[in-house]
Amino acid sequence: MHSASSIPQLLKAYMENHEDPEVLDQLRRLSEQEGMEAQFHLALAQLMEEQERADKVINQSHYEQLFRAIMAVDKPAIEGSGGRVVPIARSRWWWAAAVLLVIVGGAAAWYFNTDQPAGVITEQKEYDVQPGKSGAILVLANGSKLVLDSLQDGVVAREQGAKVVLSGGQLTYRKEDEHSSAVTYNTMVTPKGRQFQVSLPDGTRVWLNAASSLRYPTAFTGTERKVEITGEAYFEVAPLSAKGGKKIPFKVVVNNLEINVLGTHFNVNTYDDEPDTKVTLLEGAVKVTHKGASEMLKPGEQAQLNANGSLSKVAGTDMAKVMAWKNGLFNFEGMPISQAMRQLARWYDIEVVYEQGIPDIVFGGKMPMDINLSQLLLVLKDAGVHYRLEAGNRLVIVRK
Image (tube, rainbow, N blue to C red; front, top):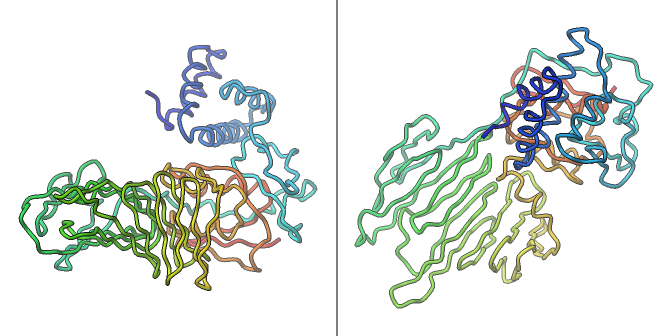
């Protein structure tokens, strides 16, 4: 099966071989995979740039038709998401931009101006930033640290009652001593630019987003299972019963918030630089408690704890947006630039600086997470967001 890396070669083969239907069929099957639409946007945009650099005549309508043929659609590839859409129809990138900019108000200097002279975008091509990858630091009970993305598969440690096995970018705890009652704790830390997955001793699976941590026992021996997190994590909790058949609850503690579950799938976002702590339920049921207040969640609902300590429940949550990070995507639908840039800062391990304040604009659309920062910024460039990418992983948003 072809992967995203084969898209550019297949596109060139299709165009150079007089639109070979077999190649088109391969492209269509590839486009059906999760997250591939944005990859096609980028590949076609880069192909146009290559043609332009080679001083070849660019037929924009041909590229548009090619994209629609691959995606089997009869409409423009990108649609607005409400509000006043930035007027980028005259731009040769309109069809390839995986992100549209929507003006919220008072930000005219930040959106694309079709009359602006060429060359107003400030771009430092000598600098680029690689995307994040799988990796984490495991802190053992004795305080020693293991950099997991530097280790080979196999048993990496033995802790109280369990051996710790690394395999295929995942960490698994396997019981060794069924009679051990001692409790020791490990902590998994994902720095900026890293994500990782761990299978806990009870079979619960946890995915950690960048700049996050998970503290957990190496064996669950009591009447409850309790872990602590910072940052963002997605849980698939395995049901567990005691010898008498009584179910053993699973608890997640974060920011004085406690999440009680028996067996369920949910996401927790508790970054310090985000305004709210959010618990989103995908499957099962959870009870979220904070200082005496509590909310019972059903699938599709989200509990929010704001900076004032107020706990509330929101229905109709966009699950695709919440889970985009786990599925390898940025989902910027209806997202202010400040929030989007915080995500980029964590994934690319960059510092984002606004020279003259934060522009009042909102993003829409999706982008894959496995691309270089320069590729992602490409879609902002032609829409009129000015930036400077400096040494030291510093992205400066400037105003022209």
